[in-house]
Length: 527
Ligand code: G4P
Image (cartoon, rainbow, N blue to C red; front, side, top):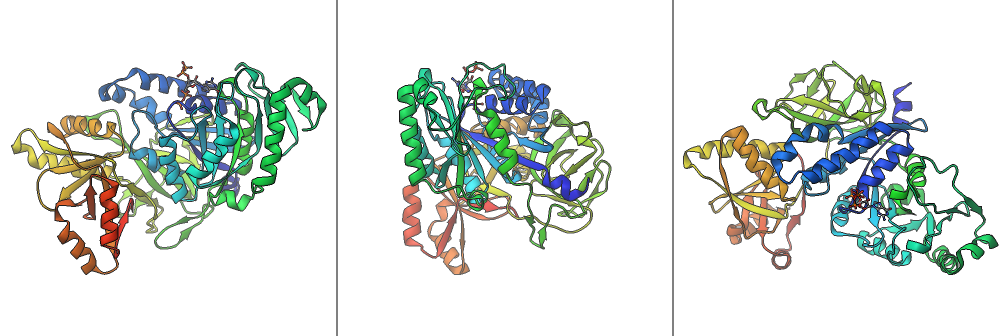
C-alpha cells in the first residue's frame, strides 16, 4: 500500500474523562467491538494494578504493562485505530496533557449523573487550544442521571462548543428504553448485559413517529420526542468543517458497561475523525504522506531499570514510513540513532514493529539521547512547534538533606526537568528551587528518582504558590520594569524563561491591570 493510502486509513485519538466516568470500560468495549479481544483484557488489568498500588514503588513495578498499554492499536473496517491512553487517575501529570498533542481527535466521556467534571475541563482546554475535533459520549444512561437537555447545555457552556446530538435517549435508569438515532430516524432498543460484541442483533424500531415506540415507552417517549423537536429547532445543523475545527461536538448517549451505544461511537470515530494531517515545523509544513520519515517525541517514560537510566521515548510519526533499523537523525543534537529494538505496544497486528506511518506511535528505548520535543528525521533539520509546557498548579520547594550533594540535586533536577517529569523554577531572589507539577504524583516520582538515580535525599516543603504564568512583553523594558517591581515572585524555568509565581488568581488580575503591556501565558511552547 502507498504511504498516502496508509495515512488515509489511520485514526489516532485519546479518550478524555474525569476519573470514574467510564473511560476504562469504554476503552475495553471499543477494543472488543473492533475485534481485539486480547488487548481488551490488558486494559482492565492495567487499571486493576493501578488501583492496587498505593505508592509509587508499586506503580513502578507496573511500568512494563503501563508502557505496553499506553498505546493500543486495532484494525477495524480496514482502518488502523491508534488509541493513546491518557493517565487520568492518581497519576495525572503533564504527560496526560502532552499525549493530547499526539492525537488527531479526542473522545470525551461524560458520566451522565455528574455532567462535565473538572478533569475533563482541564483536558478539554488543551484540545481546544489545538482545535482538536471532539466526539462526546454520555455514559451510564442505565442509571438515574441528569436530564439530557441539561447535560447538553452544560457541555456547551463549559466547553465553549456547540453540541450536536446524533442520538437521543429515551428515558433513563429503570425506564431507559434505548436511544433514537436522530440522523437515521430509528430507535435502538436498550438491552442490558455485556455479552454482545456487535449491535447487529439489537432490536431496531424504524421511524420516530412509529406508534409502536409510543405504545411501548409511554411517558419516556413523549418527553424524548418533545426534546428532539426542541433540539431540531434550536441546535445548529452538524457541520463537518466546524467539527474538524473543534467548534462542534457530535454527542452520543449510551451505557458502556452494557455495550450499548458503543458501536455508534466506534463507527463515528472511523467515519468522522480525521486522518493524520500536516504538521507545522518552524522550517515548513510537513505532509503526512511525504516519502521521508519524520517524528516527534511527545512523551518520555523512564523504564524498568533505574541503574541504566533507560527510558522509552514515545515518537508520534508525522510523515513517511518508519522501518526498523533505519538511520535517523536527532535534529537537536545532529546525532544519528538506529532504533532496532523498538518497544512493542499492544496490537493485533504483527507488523506494527516492522513499519509505521503518520499517526502511529513508536517507542524507542534510549539512555537519554532523546528528549521531549525532539524531532527524528532521515536527515532534514526540522523543529515541530506546539509541544506545550503547562503552567503548574502545584508547587513545592525542594532542598537537599545533605548540603554536600547540592550539585547532584541540581544535576538531577535539570535532567528530570528536561525529561518533562517535573518543572523546575529558580527564584530570581534566591532561596530554594521550586518544583511545579500538575499532578501530586509527579513530586513523589521525582523524590523517588532523585534518590535512586542520583543518590540525593530531597526534602520537599510546602510552597505559598499555586499558580504560575510565563511572562513576555513586546518591549524588553516593559518586561524588565515588571520583573524589577515583582522580584519576589519571579523565577526562571529550565530554559531560562521567566515566570510570575503567585498564590491566587486575584493577584494575577491585579498584575494584568497594572501592567497591560506584559503578557501572561498559561502555556509555553517547546523550543
Ligand atoms: P474510569 O476508567 O473513567 O475511571 O471508569 P471505569 O471504566 O473504571 O468505570 C468506573 C465505574 O463505572 C466502574 O464501576 C464501572 O463498572 C462503572 N460503569 C462504567 N460504565 C457504566 C455504565 O454504562 N453504567 C453503569 N451503571 N456503570 C458503569 P466500579 O464499581 O468502580 O468498578 P467495577 O468494579 O465495576 O470494575
